[in-house]
Length: 365
Image (cartoon, rainbow, N blue to C red; front, side, top):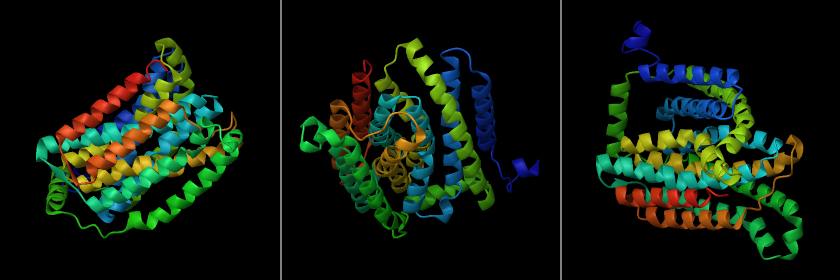
């Protein structure tokens, strides 16, 4: 009992609850395969909870890493469920779901998650302040990455000579984006960002409140186990997706843009808001913004290069005009809002409101 309730305990009560829910949801997704809505809800819950466990494991590694490293690691592992979902969806021929989910994930992190983080953090601590340099670095890469990712779409819209070669252009774009990501890693991992007094106080308070710390072997082992479980559950989620869409009369575009994007990004949804609540604005910004950056630089290019070998139709970086327009507007808007190094609940509310409007516009397809 001491290991669970004393000062030296390994698992806190919230850890045990999360582990229990993850186990129950995973078993439920395995057993409940009949019906159209229940299997979908249970498997989506399992994906979200497993992603939250990934976030919990990375959280226990945060005291050994800097803000940049935490953001990169959190985002890379947090995007694993969405990568698995996208692979299985491509194999099932749900290309519209995948293209919508890629743009939807970028929009959800830029507008919904970051907006909620600003609302929650500002409601408790007033104006949130963070490193202007790091914010501009991430958003600068974000703009360049999104612009590069959309080149095949633009070539198709204007009927340029390259418009008949979308597959080849997408592969070249994918390779360029992966190279840019590799070059960006050293800058993201720099430890030159010193924590503010508020962040140090928040971290100390969090450790005192939780009273537990996972050892390194347990955190790494949990990352590996939850990653494998997420891959398994993602397959179940995709199998349940099509019957659920037909039963609830939801379009593929809305399913990808909202449902798949939010379920696959549960880590950023929870961790980013939690860090803002703890007044760790730099860590929150790094976690939330690194996720859409890695989607543009890694996940989308990886799907382009993997699609010929995983089965299903070839995947290209040609997105619908509405998707291109909304992600471009959102990226520029967020850059403008965070370029001064501070934000509050009003700006966060406006970002969430914009996300709701975009999601509503895709309800009909």
